[in-house]
Length: 301
View (cartoon, one colour):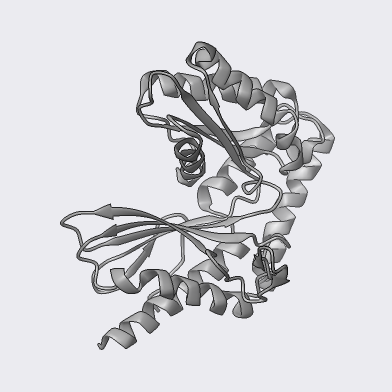
């Protein structure tokens, strides 16, 4: 297979994958929504969950996106230095988004800043966004594709606390955001929290936290405990599904962290809405694709 043929093959597979995640939610999200529905006691909350499940059924049956806002495409790429298409990856991901935009179809969500025109292709200067992790001595490529919506993930918040604020300050920051921002982001939410040394590192980690599987925990025992405390605290606010009140407001709280400067605590919050459209696919050096987030999906056929 020539390099051009390989690029076309991976582009076609990624276009199919991007379109699919806009239609069907990941297995872990569907399972969590089902769990929360059973735990709710309010008839209104249960009805809202039933509507969510009906939405999913119709999206699959009609082969159409499950939410009108198909977001800005963002890709988290964990790529081995020996992966054969590493140099072509950003360009082919952009082309895959264009193909998915017309094939799925996806809403046109890329507006050129300052010039104020919609490209009508879902690509533009810096979009889709590609975040890189480079892996030495490896020939695989892992890709998380994510549809970042205008009501949930894109309006994240970040700031730097003085060290005296401590982790209580981190907690207060998160809770303050959830009482306003959280209400408008279509609960139940997946809450990503970044704790690092500056606004940009914390913000990046809070977004990366949303890529983790539901039910996973920070490997640091204290951070994992804080995830649980924040989850309990946000649930206690009583947002409920779609902000219409209920016992459960979040699908989970994920914290990602780095070391920090002694004089700063960077903190950021990003949330994924109930329609948490992310997908994870792994390509080997021969471009065979394995999807881990959605059962029954074959990109190789």
